[in-house]
Image (cartoon, rainbow, N blue to C red; front, top):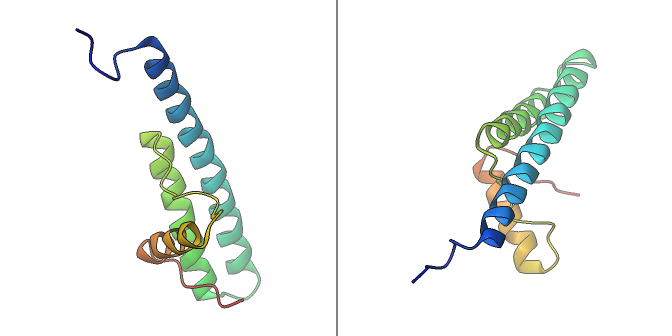
Length: 97
């Protein structure tokens, strides 16, 4: 008997999910590196540089692993809280907007 996860659709889904993680990671790496450079050129905002370095590093990990490290877009308050906790754990300061 075939177990769950052995179906062709599951394999295709895994490939798509990994591809999306890699694609998302590339975007995060570009965004983090660009914003880190902007922070350093426009007056040395150390907090911004650190935050953007963390974003770039997370993006690079996503490229290597194909695993999206976020929790989602925050469609519910619980999702938003989970994303905030995840980002703070990765060294990004809390946004007080």
